[in-house]
Image (cartoon, rainbow, N blue to C red; front, top):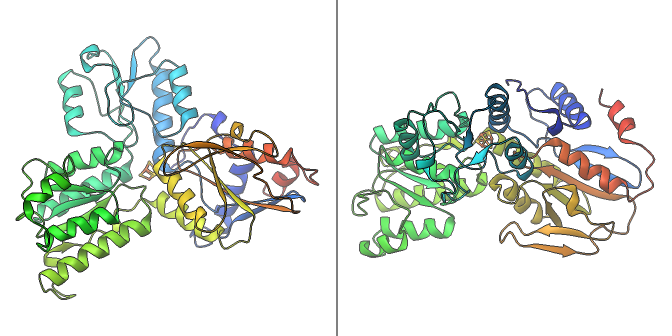
Length: 408
Ligand code: SF4
């Protein structure tokens, strides 16, 4: 995997050493057991895979290089670079201006930018409509496009399916930047619709089977289908792709449900299902798979609490919290500052995004065992800060430097 030039402020010497060591020991990435950092009275079990993914490092490298190489130029970002508040704040502090918010609401009108400006496209990608606006203004979009290749892979897969005459169903959060971009690219080639979850999938399936009147579809899925979508014929041959950071098991369940619906309704067999249901198993992102598998491996370890670190609007991070919560008490924080004291933490609800104070949050037993992971847009430096803050509450028998030596 390519190495990126990411500012040192986002790195952690300890975590880089751990990741390097684990990589050397497990080149094929088959071992999902967590890494134990044993400080005596507090023990951390770090997930096998966590933190910056390929797409995030690529986007950060391009953004900071663009700033360094273009002094005096106006530099805009279409919206948040990635879903991490620290990285976005750092970019703003260096003069980058965001044109839209995360749900696509315009903050700076496009009329205010011109061909002399630089506009960075974030890792999530953007819509064809916005690409056209920028190109019509003479703004160069290739050089400053940080769209992740794994998102583009989904677009390419959608196009391939479309060329074979299938409609596309996107499993994604309808307002998320990536889903809006994928919807735009897919619907350029074929009828396309977005489903958020299994409940909506079951609803959609009832229009395939005719259990619900076709006319009701347009109200039930308002704003989710492409222009000209014809419910009487556009759900007869389908393929499912996803927002790359969805829960892998959710996408699989949605895909399986729709496949079973098509199979039963059109009386197909395993041999003939391909005529109406495209095989799209390969659209999941590698980082989503790795991080979710690593959490599954981490959860096999007995522990007292789990802490997940990442931006609150980060889809992939929220799913890691969702997985951990199924097993044990989990706290979702975006920085060490959310740990107020040994007794109190500010926890974010991954569903509602509401923050609340929880006290006490650390158990009284010894040693305290903490499972820990972070999202694909979270700097490793933040994870180390959380470890250091928690260590400060205990009489530990080893320092960070002692632990580091074991991984060098
Ligand atoms: S989570 Fe996956 S798709 Fe998203 S930026 Fe990272 S590597 Fe790319």
